[in-house]
Image (cartoon, rainbow, N blue to C red):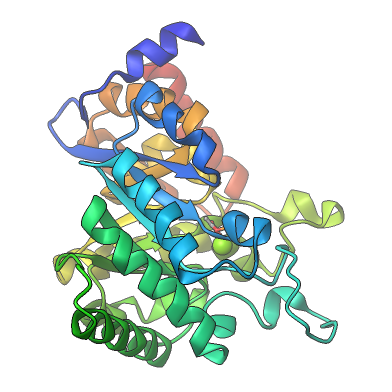
Amino acid sequence: KEAKLLAGGTGPAKTTDGNRVLVGANVEFVEELPLIAECGAEGVGLFRTEFLYLEDPHASEEKLTALYSKVAAEVAPQQVIFRTLDVGGDKLVEYERELEQNPFLGWRGIRVSLALPEAFKKQLRAILRASCHGNVGIMYPMISGVAEVIEANRLLAECREELVQQGVNVCSKVQIGAMIEVPGAAAIADLLTPHVDFFSIGTNDLVQYTLAVDRVNERVSELYQQTHPGVLRLIKMVVDAAHRAKIWVGICGEMAGDVSLTPLLVGLGLDELSASSPQVAAVKHAIRKLSSKDCQGLVEKALQEGDALAIHKLAQAMAVEKY
Ligand code: PEP
Ligand code: MG
């Protein structure tokens, strides 16, 4: 493990034919931040704000600003991408709400934020206020349509204006991203690109919604296949749409940290992989051993293969051969 940590290093990860893939870390707690530098992560590709929220659901804008500013300052000069609150689904909250029959298909993520604009704006204002302490991005979870992104951006612009009027320092270059976790959003990725600076594909949810397999139900866990060709084709659609629009696209689901899948993700053309910090060094090591050209060949084959396990084996064979 130590050898792998060293292999992560602080430098960038480039394929043998010179393609740079940024490797970030997924973070939930402020206490994890020292690990980021240690593991060689190039910033935080996903900061799950739910955990800070659960510690103090009624935190004031000032308190949130202080917390997010600390995170931004610690990660600077690298970027930290704060995901706005993604409550609902498997993440319990104390929002008073009726029990839902299908919480994963119900009131979660951006839907909650847009329904409670004052709470959403409190979080957005805190992130904007933190933006002058580092390099900050914002992304919206569970986007399913263009209107949601437009409305979220409208509220964000409102917050920015209010802060400027109050004389509060706000950084002008805050990147805005949409998480792609819903198959319908993947299918309209080209229509979402005018409204964002990047996409981050949340494969944990994208797999569950694409295959209609509950991500926390053990009974159907065998059907939860990250290498299902339907999932890979959707990822490819999103990557192609992003690149046509000249914006970057990453993956922040668990797939990003699984080195047996790195050949597929490099071949699909992802610009960024954000994994949990213990996996970062191994992912960088894997990227450095692969050629994009070989990986693209692998993806061509994989996209014509009907079986998820067969695709996984193809990827794994390349991984075993190269690292
Ligand atoms: C995902 O869905 O892949 C993701 C990163 O979000 P979460 O796991 O927090 O739902
Ligand atoms: Mg998700």
